[in-house]
Amino acid sequence: MSRCLPRSSAAQAELDASPLFDAAGAAPMLFPMYTVAAEVLLEMTEIRPHEELKVRGDLVIFDIDKGNALFVSHQWVAEQHPDPEFRQMSILQNALRHLMTSSSFVPLDQITESLVLRAKPLSMRVFQSSPLFIWYDYFSCPQLEIRDVRTMDCSDGSQQDDCINSIAAYVETCRFFLALCPVIDSPTEDKVFSARTWSCRGWCRMERAARELSMHDTWILVQSSASIELVGTAMSFPSASVGEGEFTVAADRDKLAPLVQQLLKRKLLLCLQKRELPAYRRLLNLQAVHLRGLAAEPIRDLVPGFPARAMGGHSAAAESFLHQNMLTTVSGADNAGWRPLHYAALSGNVDVVEGLLRRRANPNQRTSKD
Image (cartoon, rainbow, N blue to C red; front, side, top):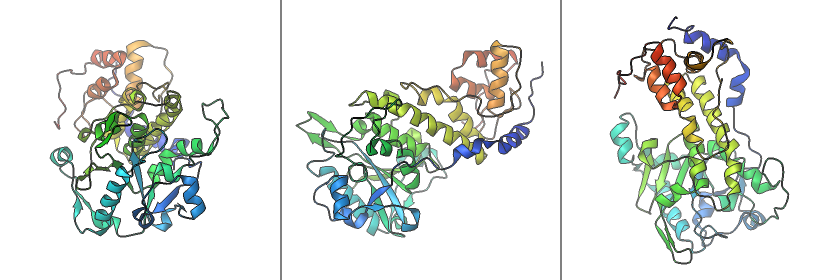
């Protein structure tokens, strides 16, 4: 049996001619992107809900012609209010003042600095080059509406639900993403909030996934007024699937399943559009990890043109795997130094691994760019 498929360039040409890339356009925005100007936020002494700020005229519907936007991801420290004592917000204000006035840089986290040799710190001047607008859920999403209509897709028909379904669009529109994770001791909640607890929350994981699966995957971690760093790789900060995160309302997990699936599909298509094949292959084969805990299946048959075969089992699985990964042989390394068997191991698909081994893939070959 031949160990080669048609050249990956032919598959790429067929992919380019397909309508699939239309799905890699902008994420849908179902509710306007309400923000507050940074100067308005810096003058705040208490956090008021969306409806009150809208009446006061403090909200701005953002578009890129107005300047730059910053998405703030944070953990609520009380059930009915995100920050009743203004402790998180005061740290955000101090961090923003620093970013908007300093001529220094946001330093890389230590792991990114050590492992990603081409990574660079972020000049704070980028926060000063254009007007800055802040997206913060309590400001930007309706908080006071009555929500009592249920629909077949687990939504409740509310404007807040439209906001939830627009998170990917908001994150993508924002030039900057900031995780606000100071250590906050909350006696009323009987817990201490921190970067670790933020990373465990399902909603916070969703926001982070939206950033890391977008075109701009770096983000800023703020743990105190003096601790601000640029996170440049997924290895830098504890990460886990959205579905295995903690949810106050268990039904929220079901809402997020199709959103995460859409994020994965769009990122895969973006990688293909940009010809970033190693990144595409890694994500394609790690889908099951991203979807753990969610009622959603990995995206299959993304690359068109795979001919129907009468054969089944490991042989068909291996051939389909090579086609979907745009690989031409079972032994050659791509420009990231990975071979087909390395990607197959990520997927955990036993039939694929067996099929590649039967085609004489060498299990002792290492990645060539360790």
